[in-house]
Every structure is written in C-alpha cells, then in structure tokens.
Length: 530
Image 1 (cartoon, one colour):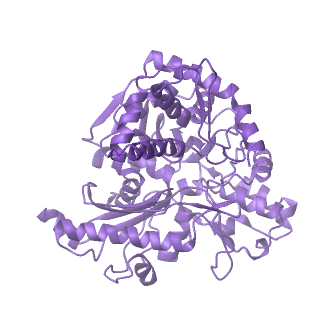
Image 2: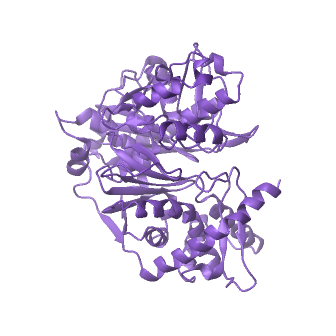
C-alpha cells in the first residue's frame, strides 16, 4: 500500500480511459502494470434524425465524470490526490465520423460505428480498392456524404474518430494509433501508414476531385505503439479535470480503438492468435500469417497497435437483445414481489441455458437492434421465431438468445475457416463472459476452437490502453510490444480455457443453418414493421 501510494505521488503510473458503447472506463496501473484504481461513467447513444450519435456534451461530461470517479477511488484507497500521472492513453469505439471545419468546429453530429447509412459508398470503395471497406469506416462516411451532396462537405478541413478527437482536444496533436487509423482508411502493413495507392485512387474519384480534396491531409497522422503522441496541455488538463488538481505536461500515447486495446488486454497481437470481444457489439480478430486470397465483404482487414494485419469479423449486435429479455424477467419478479439482483438474474438465466438442447430445440432468434452489415440488414428488428413443433421452454429460449448473440459472428468466422486461417489461441473478454463457463462454452462451440479467459480480462480495453501508455513510458531500446506484454505483463497470468464440446459444435452448426435460412424473415420484418 505504501509503495503504491508513493508511485501515485511520484507519477510512476499509467492511465487508460476507454469510451465504450455503454460505459466510459478508466484504469490506473502501477509500474508493474497491475490495476490499482478505476473509475467509470455510464452513457448511451441516441438515435437522432436517423443517426446513432453521442453529443459533444455527452463526451466531455462523461469523460470528466469518469475521471472524477477514478480520482475519488485513488483518494479513498490511498489517501492522496491524483496530481500527476506517468503517461495517459485514450481509446474508444472504432470507426465513425467526426468532421471539422478550419476553426475546429464539428460540422455534423458524431456518426458512430452503429450507423448503417453508407452502403453505396462502401460498395463503390470496395470495388475501387479491391479491399473491403465496411459501412462504419470513416472513409465510407466521408464518401457517402459527398455522394449525398451534403451541405457540410465544402467546409470539411479534417475528420477523425472519437478517440482521435478526444486526444486532439487534450494535446492539440492530430494523430491516431495505427490500429485505430486502420478503421478509418486501409493501412499498408509494410509501411505502417495509409495505403498510398488507395489514397490516390480516392482523390481521383470525380466527385471527390471536384472538391479538391487530398484525403491524406484531412486524416490524422499515423503513429505506432510506443511512439510519443504529445503531452496533456493546460487546456486539456482543465478539460479532463475541471478541479485543476491534475497538472499538465503528462506524456500521451497514440489514441487507439477498442479493437487494438482488446488485443493488447488479451495478449493476442502475435500471428495465429486472436480475441473476441462480446458486449453491445461483438467482434473477433485474428492476426494473420498471410493475406487472405481475396476481399470479403464480411471480413475487415485492420491492424494490431504495432501495425500487423488482422482479419476482423465485426457484428453490430450482441447482448442488447439479451439485456431486454432479462429485463422482462426482472419486471415479472417485481410483480410477484420477489427481490432479486440483476447479477443473480443473469446468472440464473445463463446457467439455465446450459440445460437446453444443443441445437436450441428448433427455435430461432434475431438480436438485431440496429442494422447488420454482414447480413445486409439496413435496420434492426429483434425477433423470436418458432414453429408449433419447436421445443419451447426456458432453457432453450435462453440458449437461443445466447446462440443468436453469436450467430452473425459465426457466419463470418466460417469464411476464415474456409480460407484455412490458423488460430492457435483465442481469448475472450467482455460482458458475455461474466457468468462462468456459459458464454465461453458457447463461443468455443461457435468457433470450434478452444476459448481462454484471463483473470485480468474483466479490466477490458481501459486496461489495454493503459498498457500501451505504460509501454510508451517504459519500453527499452528495441523492445517490441510483444516482448513487453509477454515479459512484463502476462508472464505469470492465470488463464482458464474451455475446449469445444463436440455435441455443442454440432448443435451450433444446426442452429446456424436454420438461422441463415430464416434470414428472409428478418428482412421482411425490416421492410414491413415501422
């Protein structure tokens, strides 16, 4: 305790703050990269004028609340005020679109990754580049706005992501970590920078050329893990901590996306390793040995924070529908006068799913709160479907919801399996894995590969970006990020692994076949339910 207190007072710490979909979380680590304090702030996106967004006030009030919660935790535990930190890193949900004019004014409300409004742009750019450009990528948002002839386009001076914006405001450095940048525009893994050939192709599109855009000059400079990315400015210190207790001048690491921080937090940044993050959305990432044979619309190619190619299957919808159903059971319990905590309710229902039939007894669920790119659904319509002969009981119902949360992910992962992509290790993290064995067991069945959890996985992306800040602060000469993680972070970490069960794999495959065949039902719901 005394050593930790001295480390805090002397700034021998690193802080990571991540803007997740439903929570902003802060984790402070010591010199050995152990979490010593944390803070959080809950928030929610909103659908305004057909756009999923968070306001600027949401961003800054949420960040200040999260940081204040962390500072309060530090003072409560160690009896000291947080006045300085060794290094800070910020991360956030990847992708999206924040466009600014020459005076740094936001031109249109922040368009998050959740928006499925750039279909034409994504399709045209994918064909032009011969490289999959998903709808949520920043370049797709810019190009779609150009195609739409949107009023703000002539005024665009630069555009970035949420993580890039926060870092920019706090340091006045317009930069991104390479992993986050790879969700804005394709990265050339040999140069660890934007793909020059594709930049030129984009600038030569007639509708782009008409505006005289040089897209490279409009995007943040790309930095790698370990690079210095400026310091916390006086204005930035006041933005982060309005009390004025935190001093400026703190070194900052490159801002990263939640995919990169998830890879870091699970030590899955080397080839043939992967991780899956399952919460509001779900995405699996595999570090590739070699490029895929061709571009697939279901597979994103992004990079690790060190710039190596990663195949990512990104699914917009994961646990939101499960949460809604669990809330129904909470209401029912309240009507009966039964007091039960939400954690106990989740645990009970998740464990009940283990009793269900391996194929869910013929039930189908579509958990689409929002549109889904992989299955080409422009909007979401959560559905639960059964035949008169389906085995409809609580166990099968809950198992169906859990399978459904991974159903679209399974469709993407099957493509990688056909491409013969090798996976030696797969690590899981996120809310789906909180109940012991359940989410992990079903994920292993979906991927037909062992799934491991680390005891530190619950710290999530905020811990991951804290590790990247620590790496920048402490790395020795040519020490790689892989070496740093293996030798200084995970050398003695406990790992819990579940092998796939053959019956579960067979059952999940049967469910997936039914799920895919029933997709026209979801399409009809989107078209006919308003």
